[in-house]
Length: 390
Ligand code: PMP
Image 1 (cartoon, protein in one colour):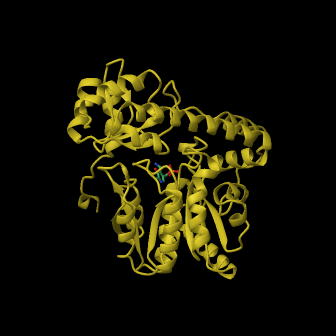
Image 2 (image 1 turned 135 degrees about the vertical axis):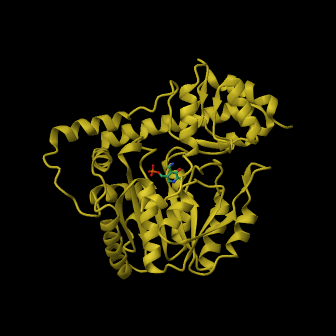
Image 3 (image 1 turned 45 degrees about the horizontal axis):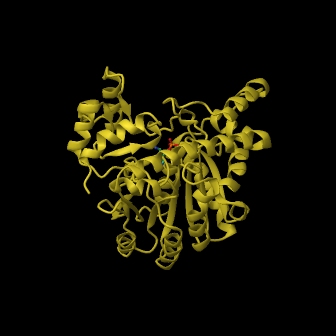
């Protein structure tokens, strides 16, 4: 059996991590890995998470099973933050806890496949490398459309809309809710409104991947575009991750919400989500979701979490401002959101930065802004400038 298996290429980012670790140069800079880092390069446990964990340790009196929906109170408390108050109370929307945003996307993919395996999933390029494999693993056809104009470092909105004309009614369109990975470049407010209308007019079903809420412009701002879409269409899905905005990465915390076209359909949708969850992971891991639930149950912890998230967001924004001011070719970085930006450089430059300066990023030229600090950003810019055009 296993003799039939072919070799698989290792994850490109893991290779970068290995190379960075092996580099003895003291001034080396890692802008590859996609996690938030503070000014010292650490990815700390948030204060509110520590406090919630202490509380759980003192008060949790059982580790007995939950159901396939996970911690329902977690999902219910998160809903107003992710969806806004009105949609959170909308009887057409039902949500369950999932193992991270990845689990939410996979559950969405399986739900689409049981509902109608002929529906294609449309993905704008470039995107997070795991998107297409997740949908293909559920047996769905993935189609791509242009999203980003690399020459101008902006969303190619006309090309994206033109791509939608290729989709058949009923197909699914994947949208990054905020902080686009890898480009950092999202739709403008008026573009979200046009998009919502186009998606509704063509009978398409949006699946919004919201993995970085609060790390772009703020919790409310980062979900505003998604709300416009959800309000403008009958059916939609939201795959949510708490792994970045609560810094819970390895705890695997996420949720999937599905908006049915009428309240009576919410129950069958939910029953199908639960049946699928049962065969995928039986039930999601509890600890991380219990932490988030504990934070959201307690106003003091909630406000401390919001404060720390705001501070993280501010750190990213100030680094973006420094990079954007360094060279005209980097100016778009100051207008983008979230952890990532795609540098306007080729593979040779990526290799040269690695060899000559110990600066590590994947071949795509995607950088994690939070991998920099006030000291390294100056060295980073100095190394980069000779390679920029204009
Ligand atoms: N969507 C996007 C765009 C991501 O970048 C990531 C994580 N890198 C995820 C989803 C998945 O997040 P999680 O770690 O919660 O599975």
